[in-house]
Length: 151
Image (cartoon, rainbow, N blue to C red; front, side):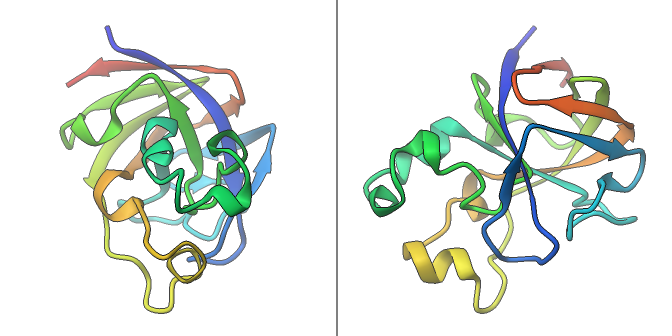
């Protein structure tokens, strides 16, 4: 069984902006992260990006500090470590803390006028970010284990 870890949880009330880190949050079934702009009744309720993907962008984000300080810069809700997220097929089920998610999309186009792309020069989300739908809600905390339970 593939396992990883939540290294950051990030939230914003607007789409396409750098998110603010928080220590824990509530995910609502079939809605997403409570209080986040991406939450809603659609297929991209939660965005995830791996620290390993962020590290690929390290040279471009040096002015923001090390890659460990850059969580949320690409507007991801959950920053992970230990799983190559973009290799998970659509339909994969993953357990994160008390929650259960289903992978619904790999990558996306940036918003027109994306603040992240403007600041950094390009964005890693279009190729390596993934999106999930919340199948079972609950609390997720920084440090929680991520388990790939079904591919």
